[in-house]
Length: 318
Image (cartoon, rainbow, N blue to C red):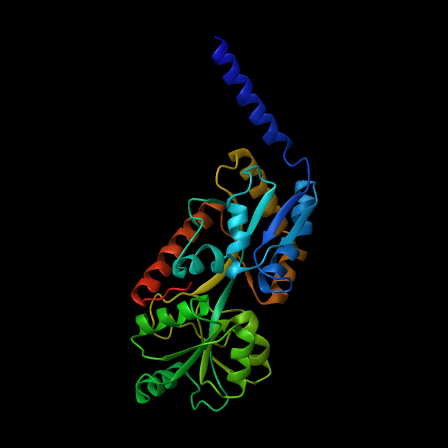
């Protein structure tokens, strides 16, 4: 009888604690430096999320090791809902798929609270590259015998993996040129030092609109409303091709289900606000309107897809 009483007391205490959540500020850890896409994403939703929770939401940058330092810190933090991760494809799917060593399991060590946004990758060409359409691009790639250069933000980046996936699904041979970030790669693309590039639409769209580079295809399954005239690779004949980056909020595994539900509902409310959605539209990203379970399934599928791409392409990063 005493043991039953203790179990009931413990269950009630757990339930009461979840009901009271949050009783203090909540932190969202961004595992990248300030002012980047992931950081801006976090700061755009934090005030609305704080209002929905009735507590301040603080954004904390813990950069380093390609996003691994901050991500590991959240994985090992107390599973109480007060320390969250602003996760992205670079830290929970594509990145872990190519890292040689991992100190956390991107699927087992986190629970998905909910999605925020996704960003398609765009295939662009330099001003001096003599192509206008994707068909022209394929023809040039074949004529150059695998020497048509294509830049990415670096070895093992989401852009690099998108290139590997394109080569495999389209049966193309291209010359991958890795850079240390999108900025230097775009500079060389604009100057025609490299012939083409795959990069996040958010980084390239300004240059596309100004006519400095040409967009010939989008990596998402549907056209981007920001570039409605640019066809998807899927409709151009690379059937099923999809390579997008995403962000979402994650909590450490073991966080009580009632706390996870509270956070998920608050995030859904925050993402439903028109001012928040408009902020993301101005960034050139698309809000992901899917449920937390569907988001968790999406993350798992995305991770497994990039694991296969990394394995088939023999891609690994220290």
